[in-house]
Length: 115
Image 1 (spheres, rainbow, N blue to C red):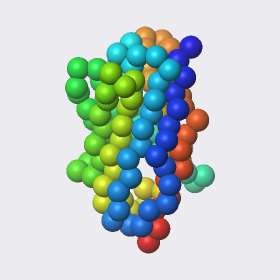
Image 2 (cartoon, helix red, strand yellow):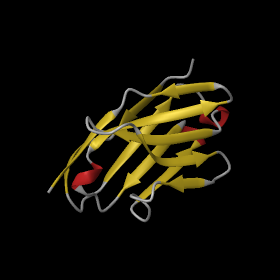
Image 3 (cartoon, rainbow, N blue to C red):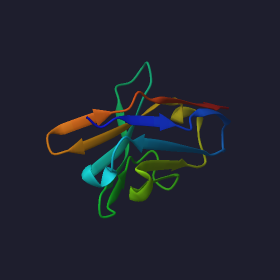
Image 4 (cartoon, rainbow, N blue to C red):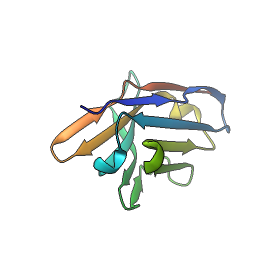
């Protein structure tokens, strides 16, 4: 079973940047679809960004132009570069992977953006 572990969350002022990483316990080349989700106590888990092996990416409208998702197969890492952060980006961010019918989630990392 593949384990995903996020890191890089923290407290940042509005307009700042953070870089989240998701490290997998085995090669992410075997995980064709990987995504970042986020959740607040008031909202359901929301898809933020998706990266498909081969390079295709997709983003929620609310983060387009500010967030960039990428993967490094050699380091078994999915990364989310978040720029121009806003207070509404405050959430727990989760890494997600899907390989066929198998799904996997990380435990999450808290991102807090102060105004």
